[in-house]
Amino acid sequence: MFKRVLVANRGEIALRIIRACRELGVESIAVYSEADVDSMHVQLADQAVCIGPAPGKESYLKMDRIIAAAEITGAEAIHPGYGFLSENARFADICDSSGIVFIGPSAEVITQMGDKATARATATANGVPVTPGSDIMPDAETAFEEAKKIGFPVMIKATAGGGGRGMRPCFKEEEFINLFQAASSEAIVCFGNGDCYLEKLVLNPHHIEFQVICDSHGNYVHLGERDCSMQRRNQKIIEECPSPLVSQELRDRMGEASVNLVKNIGYLNAGTIEYLVDEKGENFYFMEMNTRIQVEHPVTEEVMGCELIKEQIRIAAGEPLSHHVLEATPRGHSIECRINAEDPYNNFAPSPGTIDLWYAPGGKGVRVDTHVYSGYSVPPNYDSMIAKLIVTGSTREIAIARMKRALGEFMIRGIKTTIPFQLEIINHPDFVAGKYDIGWVSRFLEEKKG
Image: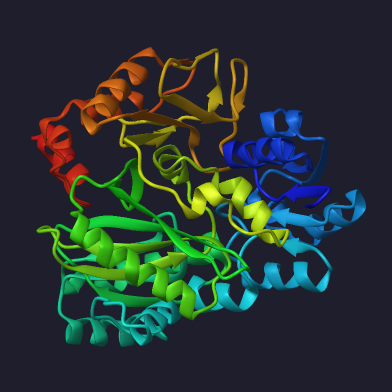
């Protein structure tokens, strides 16, 4: 096992990794920007190194500064969390050439599966169904001609995109050029790569993802699915495990396809394979693979009784998957709400500022992953998520009732949050019945306007 791990991230995921390290007896090194000096992950790490000003491109995306911090502190490995450099093949390669273990798959596999267009080709070669689509498009005009061949509606997707960034659905030909350019521009800002490709847009689909985890001892397993269909502008709001849509027969087919894919490409560590499932729950199509830990991984942990961050660290240190992971079986139902510093009744405008009062819910089956506290100032420089509220119950009905209760207990004053909007969703008959798809939130918001 490592003696010291550097955490190349911020916020709740950085704190999550630091806690996992502590339980494994591993020292943790935090890096932070000037805006994050008061963040909880900085306070709880064994050491902390400032790596630059607030903008991510001047701190959390600065590879040389992160590598220097690791070398100065004697870190043997780097955990990238999610976002920032977590799916950057060049960073993984630099870690390797610097004699530092990158806690994740190899640079070669990140390149193969982290690039969405290449990943689609890899999925096709391994017998995993994909939606009709294109290769990387050289420009908007060429892409427009290709879109007409595929047939509208289409989804414009950045090859390096993630978290809903660099994605634009297009229903009308006259909107295509502007939307393509917007997706490419956003991808350049967020990921430094504006390459885009096209996919046929499946109407009213469900977003279902499978958690996979693989070690260097020949163990390739999946830990079931998460339903991430409750989205606004391709940003997930609520996730649950297992999916209320997926039958056991479909789960078996998707799980087998997921394991075969990662086995054939020699994948190592944790990853998530994302699919679109049609509204009848019969057919599934590969979308992409996230070669990192996901924001929503806690619902899998709660249902399957494992700790994915610890397993990531253990795998990177050359250890096999824990027995309880290899033999994991589902137990109950888990739901996660992403608590964002946004005003849901003002077009979800960001709401940075000082938290005057922070009171998190508790009780049986309630988990809160967060890096904030009373008196903490939410900076305007990063993603607006400030907490994840995860509840678990023996049935979906119990989990829903528990989430209603927990959201009602959550008190955050000084900033606006998405909690009132999530309470509306959790109480809606469609959610209670499990009848929702990717377009549900946009339809719901339109109905509220009308």
